[in-house]
Image (cartoon, rainbow, N blue to C red; front, side, top):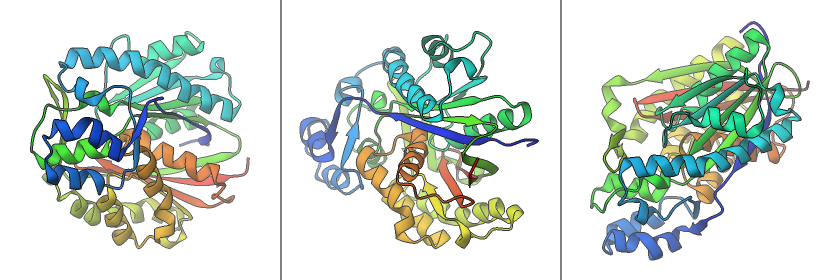
Length: 348
């Protein structure tokens, strides 16, 4: 990159409807799974205490894919608009000053898409550039950030990155498959956005790495079906994370003369408690440094691509990042793919 690209504002938005994990089991999923005791145990031990959602997931489980896509636009437009408005306010940026809007989602599509609709709703210029990143899954915020940062650094534009994921729209018909039970127990809805600018106080984007283990691509899938999108999730995913986390992070840090122990803050995608345990084991991360990731999982569930930005907002709100401190943002998803970004707190 020729110039600088810095995250100067973060904003998030959650659906107004939420319930505890116990409530969601008792009111919805106990009937969905016909009182399956294994499902109940998995439900109550997955590290999630509360989640937000835009729809009754059991109602949505009977819808066709077309109905789910129509509801996605109806719900994602105001939710994404709230997240974008919050990050613009945090950065002190006017909508008309945005040169690029990038929207990330793997849970819904339309044409004209959210990028066009949100640009119009927020009053952005008709010359604003737009990019849509679709169906990459939980790690997609990082390649989205990479594309945005490259534009900002190379051409001096101010950009917005929005991740909006409405996973409750993809509740599946009843099944005893463990993979589906785990997916339904973990995922929630959210939107999160960042402003990336060529200057100003914030987190400078220093580097990006990616690792794809195509031999284990079958371990995590996100298939389009006649009943929405269906997740495939192998119990062997934590093992794959353990194999790739340290080599990827070392490759990210080495060009900057840094080692794993130099990282001040970790923004680790909480795919579930075992995933966080795998990252901790592979990278020797102190449990205290994973607390923001575990607390976001606890409070919101796994919100796919939006999750790492929810964690980043929580860390920044707690003023945990000192000037010059390196921060690693890392996530994984279908492929089997791992992406990581190196950020550094800049003074101005």
